[in-house]
Amino acid sequence: MFSRARNFNVGGNIQIDIDSSQHVHNGQDKSMDGWKMLLDSMAPNAFYDSRARFDPPKCDEDTRVEVISEIMDWMGDREGPKRLLCMTGAAGAGKSALQQTIAERCADSGILGCAIFFSSQDPTRNDLSRIVPTIAFQLGQHNPRLRDYIRQAIEEDPPIFTRTIRTQMERLVVRPFKQLQANADFDAGSFPYAVLIDGLDECSGEEQQTEFLSTIKHCLLDNDLPFRIFIASRPEWAIRSALNSETRGYLHPLAYHIQLSDKYDATDDIRRYLWRRLQDIGSRSHDPRARSRSWPTVEDIEKLVRAASGQFVFAATIVKYVSERRSSPVDRLHTVVDWTPGEGQLARPFEALDVLYARILSAAKESYEAVDTNRGRNFLLLLRAHQINSDSRVGGRVWNAYEFDEILNLERNGHEVLVSDLHSLAIFLQHPVFSTIIRMHFYHRSFSEFLDSETRSKNMFITETQVKAYVSEGLVQVINQVSLEPSSTCATFGTLSEENPVVALALYSNEGKTLTDQQILALAHNDGWRKFDQMLSETWHFTRSHTELPAMLFFIMQRLKNELGEPGLADELKPYYNKWRKLVKSYREEYRFEDGDLFSRLLLEEPEGETEKGEEPQE
Image (tube, rainbow, N blue to C red; front, top):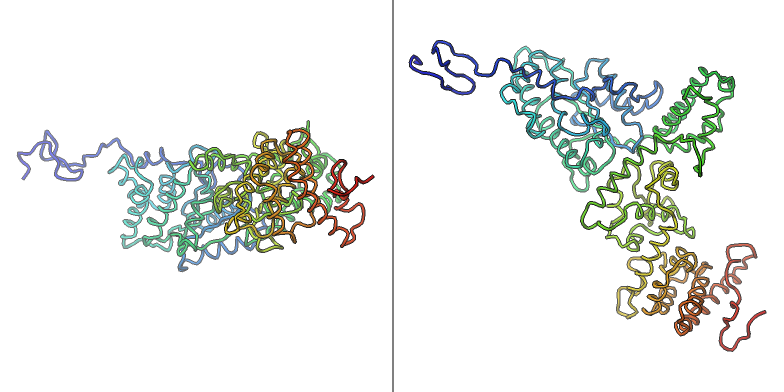
């Protein structure tokens, strides 16, 4: 039927040879090798046993026993309804060590289908461009027939590696595996079925992380494939939103979720890890002190365990620092235990940890400030402000995060937006004592110390003085916006119920000493003194113990009179000052506070030259 035909396609890749109609062949270029193209497109550095990941973190034999058992039990339950396990946890909680341990156990038992380890520092495995080819290659290694199906798929569509991740997964994994399943002699029960993905948060960009999770759902979970998929990630936005039950995240009904930092207390494991590793280092040391049975001491170990805050990365950092063979482990451990940041400090025991913190913080800062509504805001300053407030560092008081947002001129729930890319380091939780108060909580104590130390945080450091000045400015704006009209809903400060912005201003402004001339005059010209009085009167039972209040009022009076040339404004403030000075003094006398206590700082007597009308100056 093709006797007169020349050089035309019948369909697909079948074509008629131009010189002889008797030779029908596959028109694909014979030099094309789909499997070689796959090799060129994958990321071998992402393998669990890659040389690029030499000496990867993994769990010591008697640590993490409970969580490893839970994961392996889930992995072995092939009939279990949820074929996806998501493990989230704080930065340094030990997710990668767990994933590596699970990968090795699955490999030893012959069930490891593939394992992918993302890394933000490796350009071959910090995005999605090589991920599907890497998965396809590892799966194809387990069955020659599957390998042929994958090769054919590539040869039929050479530009496949430029297509979307979902398309790649569908054509290089799903279709070839379904072709394999269609073979009568294929035993699905014998095919390695564990698919491990570590460090999804290390994949650059929320959009890519979301695209990958969506691809896993639509291609691997929605199809009848025998895989059980284990994903480990910091609790960043992409995976948090996908697993969120309140917002009906698309993975919530499909996934078994382990929240590592919340569910498992690693304190005992960290203690065992430190004992074993430090004693091992000591046994190989040339320093006889390190080989002594009394090293390390129980006291030193307990200090390190407390500092670790349940996060393995801290302990691993200490062990690595102490193991330096060119110096004594005893001296280096002493440096760690007693280390305090200071000028000229040469020791850097937490350098590796600080690099991790700086990387996460820098990415969060860039993402936050890139949003148009956040432009002009200083992310680090806002974060530090919430940190200092949550630690009750100013006057021993802590403001509810919602109310503090108003002072910082943030939108409602602005604190949640602030840490949306920091959930591996910090979140907002209820106060452990006062349940109505929401405040910032750090997974790592060392991260809070990092923010406090200019030596460690370097160009990301924000001083407490900067924070106090910023908060003071916010408080002045809040007070100026308050209306004195009886019908106004702003007669008191917003949703504020347990704190008072006037008292807070006294605390944050160092009793008024750091207020600028402009801020003082703005208060004076906006009925500030009457607002002070009304706001204080309405919450007197919360503020009566504050000695900073009369001190601030007195200092403002002095500034108005002596520096700003506004004696009239100072006179307007004077009766309010006298009223609140007497109230605080009366409270002190009623409760019989002794000299030397907090109230000894109160201006109990009239300041020199400032007496009430009809009174004589006191000696």
